[in-house]
Image 1 (spheres, rainbow, N blue to C red):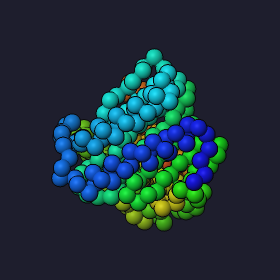
Image 2 (cartoon, one colour):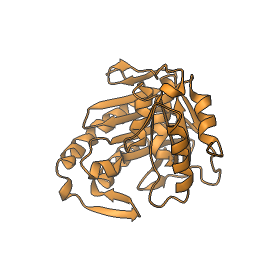
Image 3 (cartoon, helix red, strand yellow):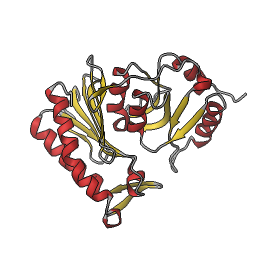
Amino acid sequence: MRLGSPKINLIAKLCMKVSRSLIRDFGEIENLQVSSKGPGDFVSSADKRTEKILIDELQKAHPDHGIVSEESGTINESNISKRWIIDPIDGTMNFLNGIPQFAISIGYEENGEIKCGVIFNPISNEMFYAEKGCGAYLNNSRIRVSNKKKIKDAILVTGGPKYSSKIKDKIFSEYIRVSKNVSNVRKLGSAALDLAFVAAGRFDAYWQRELNYWDIAAGVIILRESGGFVDFIEDDKNFPLKKNILASNSNIHEELRELITKKDIE
């Protein structure tokens, strides 16, 4: 596998390390302890155990770095200039229901910019990774976004809304408006893999509201290094870890952005 810097090598090895127990857990889901974080939002003992291993190993390798993780929040807040962004299982609902569409996602950020990232689906054994300026890869192969030029031919992927969302009507209206103007819209249940699939040209674009930063940090650098464009739409500066995202190839990006942010359905 073509990996580059010590940091991306570190997170790739960590993904492989924790994947062994996740594969075992995936085959014995009925034995996992599961608790609710809120309506329609669950966390399993596998999430917590995977996160602990990742945090322990990253702190051992870089004790001065900050960490932002889904279950543990922000660690070492005194250093936000160098930090790791972790989602131990992106797609927990899929994982808990025996759907093999979930991933470990780890990104490394310096001074507010993601420098490298890895997304690994342990069931399919697909590892997507990228470093700034070095391109994006799936296992040993370079990946690029699609070359679709018209949104009417595009296949999009999206997600949400959660049960607790306060903007469900807006999201559903947006979905209807977009789906009327594109070839097809899919929903797979893992933001990290959705971004990776756009980077690999499997989908032409991805958009979603009310995401968390750890859902997409690694995917953003992989998407950009594959030649794609990423926009954060209508961000709320009061909640910097919450994101609304549009990611696509350069040919259809602006037209999709206008369609998604349009106020009224015609």
